[in-house]
Length: 325
View: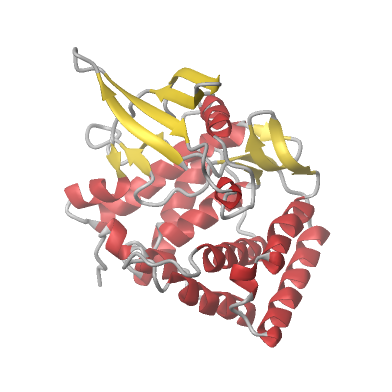
């Protein structure tokens, strides 16, 4: 979606140029997980909200939206990507667990940014705002039925089972709707945020830069994605311990650690169907089989048993974190 450049001045000072791609196709300007409008203006607005928390986001030196195009001049963030930090530390499990605890504690500061409705965080407020989270999930999950890249991969019988599962899940969520909308960054996988490389805060979160999917949603949406992307980095054997370490820190930081299994199911099937549609027909030598893999994962969710480590395993060629037995 964007054009990104590093700009270095004569004195060595660096800034990051991020320009919006004005020739993108309409479907490329919708986010893949929630169907929300994407824009650089939205990202800048999210960064400004994050500046009110302990979660560091780039400083915005300049933002322009006009005849010359839409672009932002942003500060550089310190630190290293999480997967690089783990490699630098020799892939030690105690380092991994301690880091997840610290990341959780820092990330919990997003719970101070509250909203009165659920939806996408946009520059002008909450997009597609809903008072009840079940209504928001109904909108998000309902879009898959009209996406031919999703629907065409399932038989009629399979899709009927999926729709029944979604309807039952949403009904249960609606019956217990005492949920709070807070800022959720989302999409925090091992290559998508920075941690301190050394010092007393080594391994702790020190910067997020990819904030285009930010939501006003329950806290559990944040750490559900992380459970898919991070907690099985060293293999499924360590998923439970990794999740416990993260939630310990998240709770210590004041975050909501309520583990609502029905919400987790709704998040999981939305993620699965989103990936099915987005990567249908995708060919790059790494993601070729993702659509088919997540089709099966969707059916596993409906049957009541799915592998939470699938995403971490499929992305292993990208994050390069080894399995530890």
